[in-house]
Length: 116
Image (cartoon, rainbow, N blue to C red; front, side, top):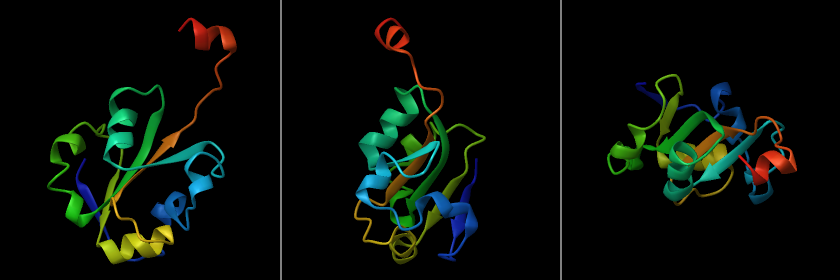
């Protein structure tokens, strides 16, 4: 998947990332959740039962995260923006410059959780 540049903070493709707050990282987006940072993105891509809907990176993180970016499935859009644009979309300074939107999927039963 090519990197999709973003320059407009009002870009509708980035709606899940708009004005996020800490509580939005785990709830508040219905069937979606937001992860922040390299470690959580790596976990989402490599050790998670959850699908990735999109990835949103600061331009400055593209080169350092090239190996991790290569793990993003081909059908998942990867958006990149200048740090100032990313901060404006998120609603606060995104120091890590790494966000991803995951899909919660079906809720597991206790039995499925204990005996996958």
